[in-house]
Length: 317
Image (cartoon, rainbow, N blue to C red):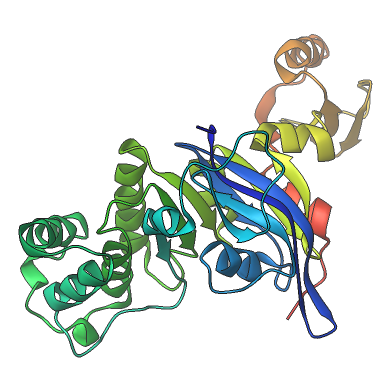
């Protein structure tokens, strides 16, 4: 059995003459949370749809739980041990668009989606009860979904998609359009799925959330992967390990000279490769020159900075 829950190899797709995927490759390990990021039009949606079986690739391959579910097979030494149908039955897809029936109650929605996933009888009833509690909707089970708030619909949407205990889950913008309280509840739900061992591929424009929850990040642009790794490794490879340090003093210090620092009134701004090792000496030198330090601010590079560095600042509508 492969250690990868999902492997995308050289995925290619055109819509007419417009390229959507131009050779994207990456993998999702079993039990891992992987963030899939990219600007608008980068190919994320096409890639997610291809994994879900809703778009046919022009070339390349997708392996899901040891079964080739798209393309003519991945480059592997061992033969797939599962059928595409079996693999897809263990896949859960939470779409960005709300995909529930507004005229049905929460319970009825779950019963419909559970039946479509192959559940029946006592097993279906047990999972519906579980999903209502999981989504925080047990007290609204008999209410029509169309009367729910945006956050409640999102939570029901997730519940409908994971009733059948999928091993791999595709989450496409799971917190878009919801208030902070609903967003926090959704992340609590997803944390429970992680604790249960699910492998999750997450797409989101909330980069701070992706940075907080994902083990690794894949950034796609112009239809191919341009970077892959942990947040720390991506920062080191793109922006560098130096940190911008701003020291605010109690007075202008034009009489003080510090290597790699520039002074602007009472503020000294510089860059350090190892803040913990270098900053104490700087502070000691300032104290020796009679300067009292009022504040020290260290800018920590973020995933957003990496994303902008790799994909540019221009808007893509």
